[in-house]
Length: 114
Length: 114
Image (cartoon, rainbow over all chains, first blue to last red):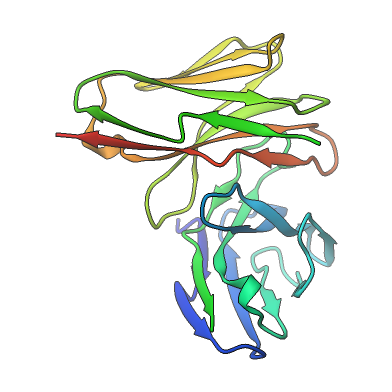
């Protein structure tokens, strides 16, 4: 049981490039989330999904897009990378709503935009 | 604006000693409070979740307390071990139906020294 798996673990992008951060979970959780963690700051929610085909914006969605075609996968897309998107990105999932269920996190993708 | 404040920002203790981390919140309405442990380079892992009616909850050597009246929580670590070195994050939820907003603290960085 792998839990939440994120790939890649590290990536360096040039300004203006695009990439997709992958996230997959094998716990059959309906709810999935993308967060970013900046140095010295609390996690900020980018996007979330309550099930396949349903996504919604979080606190900091600008510059990102998501899709949820299956229960297992929830990729995060950066279209035009900017230095402000340098951060550590965490994907998480939960059985029920994040409000009353523990979230299971992946180990993150460390992204640098130069 | 919902806020979660943690103190101290960082802490160094000797192996075998006890310590207590603090969390104050101004989240309304309040649903539950959770503590996460985040090892360096890893994703957060849930330690405890406490609802309004729970005053204390334990997970091994970790004991969390909650005072909903004063909006304060603490995490007590007993007989610390080197493996306890990590960031400890306090998170407060404002609901448990539909999508709930989670407010993350910035964390307390704990270093357990031999």
